[in-house]
Length: 366
Ligand SMILES: [Zn+2]
Image (tube, rainbow, N blue to C red; front, side, top):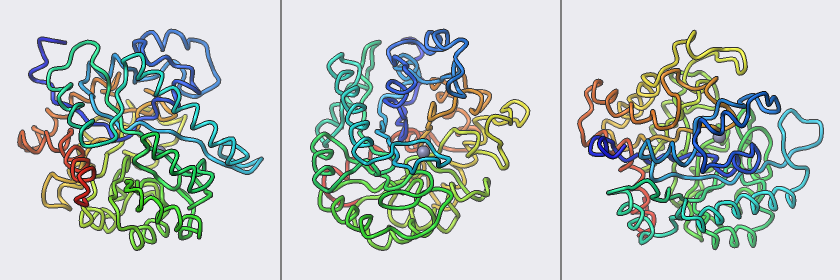
């Protein structure tokens, strides 16, 4: 690990459900990926048991030093197809539990929270010369805003370091409808965005349905990014962005994190049935999605990595040349083979998101 450190490029991953894995999958993120896999042998309660790809040691091995880490809790109606809580109060309490886990990992020296320009700079310094115990530096985000009971609760979340919010997730939502649904933001959604703007928060465009996507762009004047999204050009599904959407995000100075979920990388993937080896899903396909954004932008300043690894799926739904998140270190060489310069590669692997956050924290607009 130490000897190869000069070659490894720092990686910023803009979407990891770390606390969800700790608190719902019972995965102690301090363990090696292998140890977690062994602990899950024979378990059948989740589709990805024994096939995780993320843990703190693997993040360090892959020099994934800066991440956007989520809180996530949906509100659903009984009997619906998507799992979730039956009240906003329960969802709020659930995200508080996730926050408490992040805090406990900070106390243990495993994590360090990024909330400001100063903490971002400290984090970058730590990762200039990382050691075996260097904390993973995380910016707190919320995937789907159902758990935000009121704007007072949003304020409390902000005070706890929440800096990025995606209003929707899958299907109907409290503030906006997400993937596989339709409709503009509702009145509460508009209020949410106005309040986020006042607090200076990042609006995460990921998971907004097409109507809400355009509505949100129309009304939100603050910083926007897309934490984990791929290109509809290659995967014809509303979860991904059309060229028109990507072009508008680029115009608004967003960075788009490319996800390593096989379902989002190739057409017609069937969860639980398709096989990454048979479908030849490799990291090269992620590079094609990155390249498409760069081609639309005319530069390499708007694409990043938002892997979403262990986001409710494991190796059975990952590129077959990725065993753990540390294998994201294969991406720089693949980008180089596609003609990207060293500077382009550093931009894609971390600098685009770092630059975005520096501008965001300095209040210069993004
Ligand atoms: Zn997601």
